[in-house]
Image (cartoon, rainbow, N blue to C red):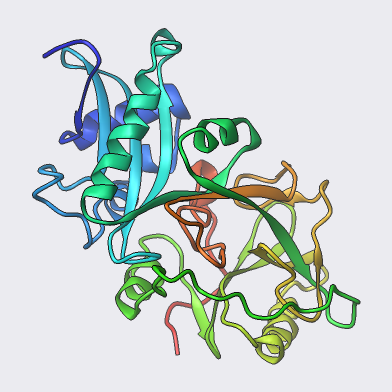
Length: 305
């Protein structure tokens, strides 16, 4: 095997060891086999392309893994789409161009099936990497729901890109109702979950349809009542103001995707050959347990109606 060889990863334990050693010790994908399968072995993974059943490319020097790029294969925004999730190379490979070759290979795999490739959650330091490779880029914001507060005028519903498909019922079944850790609820098309953490109580709006203002107000009233005097917020991610009652989240508000720490409320969505028309917290891996967060039970009950 040549140094710098790129090929599909077929050893889940080797991948988990790499994530635990070089990405973050105790990371949920390194410690939870069910979450690893949920992320990288979705029903839409083409086993003829990924013989090991995981949509992950590895960088190898002999039998030693020196980097990897993972993707979540989903049926939207094109029927075969690759949502990039975790990309890392060892410091010794930096400057060699091998990290970029991982991305180029994943792009090639997506393009061979007339698919889509991108992510929701890119940091500003990664934007030049995507821009010079032909990706569309747009900033997304975290929004907080505050009934009665003034909000930006609601914009006209965004038109879908001509090649874009909506998330299917099968994707909702996989992404939400069969999640190995989190339990979600659904009300009038709004998918959400409420959790307790070190900061307080948070309702994550993970997917919402257009025109859900009344449903969101009802959900907020019901879920905020569970706070029992603790701090409470309901949040969502969107390119534009999601509707009445939504205001931009302050930059010093701790994130609840990771253990609470202020990380700002702007992240970026990137896509090739187009950018999806809307973003949701449930896209890609933006609603994923991490380390200690995985052990905190949800307040939300299982099931959907």
